[in-house]
Length: 229
Image (cartoon, rainbow, N blue to C red; front, side, top):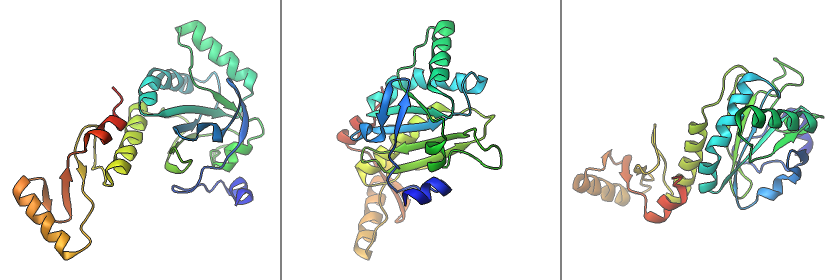
């Protein structure tokens, strides 16, 4: 499986995130270092590029909110660690913003190819803007891919982590445009008795449109786990 991933970059939602060891701006790390925490693992096309610089600043500003929901950030590009350090230092000198999360130096491209971060029709080396949301058990839960010339909307990445955490905690689902503290969708009934109970609940509480779509308020435990402020 590891060879197949390296050759094809066919990581999928629901599979275990491929482990790796890498040099970063914070020293050597393993993906295993993040066990027990959620991780937003993202790639960027290159250091000292305009869109990437705005993203790094935006990720740093949002980092305290990610930490509140037990989530870490990890960047990557195929540039060297020296280049990363110079770029991070330049951002600090010009803005006063110090990045609190590491950036992986993937000079060989091995990690990038393993995760399918390189779009071969665009470049043989530059990583496109991928985002992998990895849960506390090391399972890939979301994959986002952006073109090289469009910056990511960081609040949506944060919201997606919160939505997955809420869906897990409530054993339900989140609706279109769901935001933290909003009701979640109840699991669909699996028996006719459950269907009748759901319809009765909807009639009494006006919390749905029919047996296949009803809502419930998350309990306090779930709310506290996904609350970022």
